[in-house]
Length: 276
Image 1 (cartoon, rainbow, N blue to C red):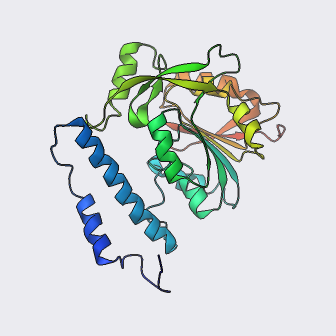
Image 2 (tube, one colour):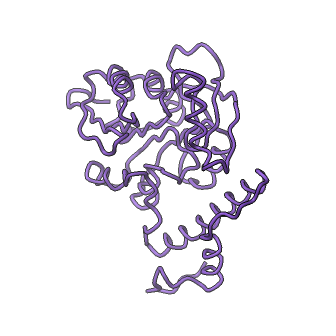
């Protein structure tokens, strides 16, 4: 697309303005799940068109998707360009992503891990500059080749991660966008985080963002800290003390908590005496 020098981000072509205005309308009361999902897919596509148009003009107006402005809150800790990230629980690569802004505007590169196949495919489209993997992260001693999961959009989880099947189901139902999406069970290939980092020949990891709906401590047990020690680790803990203690038991004295960036997310920093 040819853009005129000095063009304003709000000077959208009329056809695009009309299209985006239609996308902003309230979701119509369709009854068919297939039609509802198609509507959501089309709306996401139109949002992507708008966002990329603004990005080509140098505007980050639609490029801070992180919940609770986590991407903005991370900037003081990660002020430099061309860092390396790992984001596990990447979803579609954009919605609530903590690393999208870093890639698009700070020239960072990195790894995205998303276990749900349909979200993984969306992630490939959204994040062509990242290395995207379709696995569930597991401890180094995990005995099976696959992991049983329940799909719930942004709240998909490993079965049992919430402590009971009932708690799991309540959790994933909350991620179905008020009933517009659906839930289902799926077996996902298992892999440790260190094996992925080894495959890509990863440099020092500047930020590990971990949001795997209650399976964070187990995922961290798949990181070989003798070889891979990220500078910062951002973990979604949701204010649950038991989960936080489990995460901190794995991190050990290698890390110190530096700030709670949201009601659910804690940022840890590698201690000076632990280097990769």
